[in-house]
Image (cartoon, rainbow, N blue to C red; front, side, top):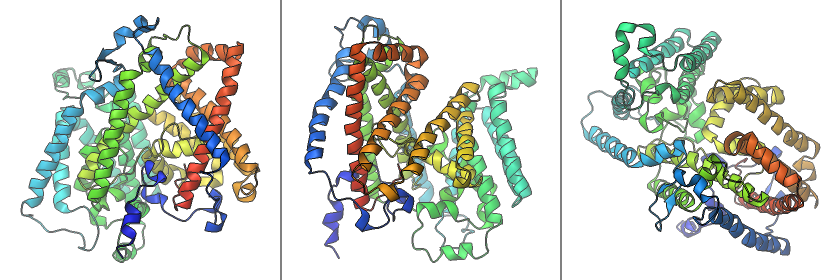
Length: 570
């Protein structure tokens, strides 16, 4: 029995990617492998891949050296963005702490860390105190303990009072109205419709009235607006809360329509999977107002997520200490990686000041590429921080970012892995109820329209959502015309797929560079430099060849995962 332990503990290449529970399963036919016999043999030791290694060993250091050299104080463009830099702590260098979103999190890491210690300390004190009441749930059910829920409720109320002050009363009113819709309409479809209408109206009202300041409506109460807590703009982060409101109401409606034997069947399951925790309903008594508030305002996930459904939140088993230790290591490694980038590559400041005058196409592309890496990290790090907090508290929310930004070639796979908990929420509450793949194109447009409007109620983002929908169509068409199930064994299939993946990468990078990095003006300059000069055309050909090599390595990495029985679908 003990023979397998050393083998399991040994490090494998596939361990570089964060583990997600749903990845260990049998492959789907649509994923191109139906049995172990169909898995390709390893190519890591072939001459072809040794050539790829040589290319990677040359190109990756160059990709690092270019932005580092552009960030030198001796560079002619350095004075243009010097004012955006701050004093750093690594080797006496400046730090590019100019990104407002990440700066807010980075500067508050000490305070947030203290909050974690306070939360866990008082949670421990509460857990060792004698319980005043017994559990209302059958003892065999694997749910959060009543004492844990009571503490979460109390700590949540204190937290939002400190964060939002008088605005916490507005939040509680919204929660009460949403809960009333769920309880009054129970299993009715009308309840689901009203839930969506109500929460849509809340989002619209928050946008239009900027948090419903009391002075806007009652002049005599204007003085209360000055007691708005540490973070007065509560409506900015309320979009995530809305997802939890919809989750509770929908899960409750499905619970009202479940079979009576569903809960009894759970007792026969030794350990619930992530998917089962989401789909299996609870006894009616678990859908109480106190549990609802404890879930919606749960401190570790309240500000930024990851997003967890109500059912999943209640069906919880504490993660093992080994998992928590490895996750702490991943978080610290990600944080230090970001610190090194910000201290040695001032690409955010260069982008903000448009200090790319005189840059070659290769230099401009690296400014854009490393800006995208920073965008990935500035989202990954807070999400991992708050998820780690939840894991330490015994709650296991979904992992948000599965792959590195530079390890994506599929538009659909990129969407699945980029904000995974949000993607799982959309699949459960929008995509599947609308018919799923039966109405693929229409549902894709609806989904990305919702994604855009959920982020910001502007036509610009709505247009972005429609554009992303269009970007997915070529990939869907290619998969339909040349399915891997039929042609995957052909010698040419992998190389044709790599060329298509290169086109996908260029398209995705172009869209994100325009939307989040250099903007339309910067993109015009870049396109002019690439297609208007001989040097630019040479760079484009070289970039395509290098991306082709990168995609081949991505393909083989996923094949290695398949050989290990891992299917991440991204």
